[in-house]
Amino acid sequence: YGNGTTPATDPHNASFSISTTQNTDASIKELLYSPADNYDYDNINIPLYHQCARIVVKINDDKVGTPTIADITIGHDSEGNKIPTSGTFAKPGSGNLGSWSSQGNLDVITPKLETTVTGYDYIYSAVVIPGDGTIYQANKRLINIKIGEEWFVYRLPSATPIEPGKQYTFDITVKNPDGRQSGVRQIMLDGKAIEGNFIPATPGHHSVEVVM
Image 1 (spheres, one colour):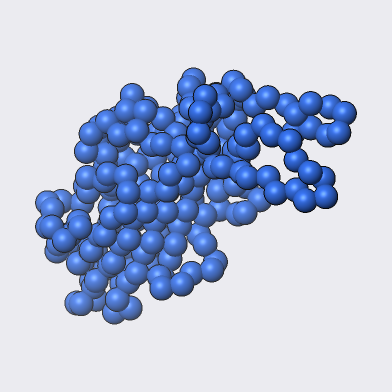
Image 2 (cartoon, rainbow, N blue to C red):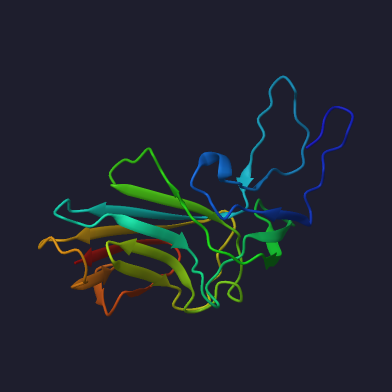
């Protein structure tokens, strides 16, 4: 930032942290970057680029006795499954996305339940610190959802970079034709059946169907 007489502050090698509890708008922090430029005070239009990443979980249920969502976390409070909540940001050498290093303060994030929901029963979202495959390692419990008495766990199938400026979306449909309160009959990931409650999750957009 800057003004007419003071040069803008260079964000290079800036320390930044996110909140572990992101269940309100006021608790959500995001790092935005704008390339250095000269701006006309009478017509200011400053482009801002997201430098963190975002995880979005969209959930629908069939309204037939489906248990409510009891808990949801990003990361898990067990050895090797917490995720970084701070890091050092380096501005881009070119383009609009910078890089991250010195990720630390490992913890678990409580995402925000969005109040404006279109086409889904629940939408949860969380801002996360980007990192490479040494941070987001294979088999890490990235997303954990408790529906009724059952936990559903999304694991990274391989070392997977979580990139700045990217959104990772998971669409989940819960079907409960017999009105069960626990137990899982089948889970489909992108149209393919998988075994157990541990779902291999890769970044991008995925469709998950859970039949109780």
